[in-house]
Length: 490
Figure (tube, rainbow, N blue to C red):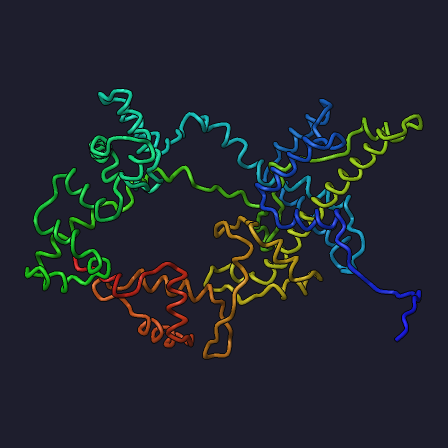
């Protein structure tokens, strides 16, 4: 066997993920809040990047005049701008460079429609910070109550340890034995302080499990009696499954007596810290607005809160200065290139969101006109083919992006639904079927709730053919309990 060395030429095509392409893809999948944070960090890190602030009084006066226009005037102009934008960029689909100037002119009008109408109303409202107070955490609330008790320093230390191990639900997540050993504390003393904490507000706080939580609430509210305590102690599983007959049989009492005591338990709170979860509320800022004007549905990008970026004039002048050279000039050149790519990527992101939303509105017009019952089946491929983009791009664009419509705020993903067959041959969106199931459950007789099979039969009467397991899956997605757990006895 002989070995030899050879040189050969080979021509291949390969897709390279350049840093610029990686950045563009990253920006596409960022939510609005994440984009604002990312832009702020880039402005702080890149000296060549700055916000395009208004400098001259003439420009400021012009912006003020724009804000004083009526909403109808602004919207009308936005439609004209959008039309010229589509004419210049939307019809070729050949991957050529976008008309960024036309896009900028359109986007400069977009914020006005969302802010001009509310400007006067906002001025008439009191300061938001004066009417909204921050609810403290559960731990802060408990510590404040402990501070009012006659505890010495050692007892305060133990109480702080215990409260620090109470989770947001209000349950103690550490055993007394473990805490006593780890901190070298007297277990009897820890037990006594825990008992004091368990008598604080909210009722039931500091329990180690659901059973203890209910017992504490019964004790602190003076609601305990032999029957209700025995139900909590021995029959939580039957209580969860609403098997009241089995409880009556096991306790050898009447069903009516069981129901009377179950009514007491139903008024208790299984999650004592629930009221302190309000601080976790997430407020959504829509990325795009859809509204109707003159019989046509109009799409407007929401640019509020997104700074207008530009390359610094100072560093642009430095680069044009022939005297500048060396490492400093190379550094500035690199930062300027990064700034230009970021600006271009943000523009491309906004343009893509606009085109995707426009395609969705075109395909889901019946939804915007008549409601969720008229939502049509649609998949990512439908929009991808409509605007000549890849399905993965559509997926990134629609993830964590929200649209404000006259029917509410929806994630763009909401409009993509699988189809459900109907007897007349017309397909129906799965989301519309879920809405029907939800409405059926809302109006059902609580004493005789609809079973999954009965829902199948009702839908079949309406020409919608579904298997029982599919109804069960949709019901679970809607977080609707089975009929056995929805049944009300009182």
